[in-house]
Image (cartoon, rainbow, N blue to C red; front, side, top):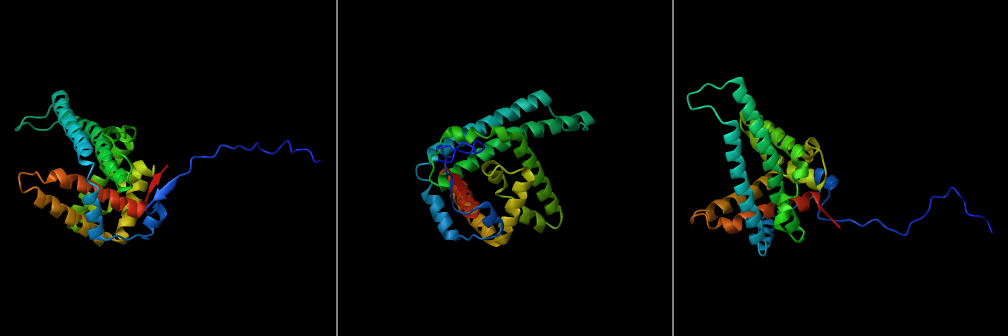
Length: 248
């Protein structure tokens, strides 16, 4: 019998945990190989609000309260010039510091809300704690926020239409950063390239969602109890259809 090769690497019976993806994929999304029905997305997003509103609003309420507290603390610590007082270089530095601190807190929290919608889109359980699970991405999310805001603002200065284009094109950059582990620029470009393939359809979907929210807010804003979570689900479903969501 031939002796075993001593240089053969040892085999293992332990298998890696298999991953499966529901929906599209990063490569197919960028290539534009996706499609969706506006009516079906809105209907599904509405249906998925059932059983998630309490969790969503508990998380949203905590986030809104936290942002108010952060704003008050920053105002107290850094202050602001009086109404007729001229801004000094020190004041501008304070404002920059304030924006950086605020962004480092705000962007992970907003990412948490968006990820609740993505988890809901693939019928995964959601909890309040999940909305606060992305502070490890504070720096890249802050960079992402600054870049998208700056480029969109420049776009609005250039005859408005480029700004509208970028505002829609970057709408999925945040979940791409945290769910696909992309860099800020990779997330921005992946979102832009994918959405550009069906930009008008995405625009019309978001416009329809915004109109639904606007109408629902007319009776003392009570309708937002349902339509705000629905809007988050819309983003989650569109993300699923374009880029897919990895599941264990």
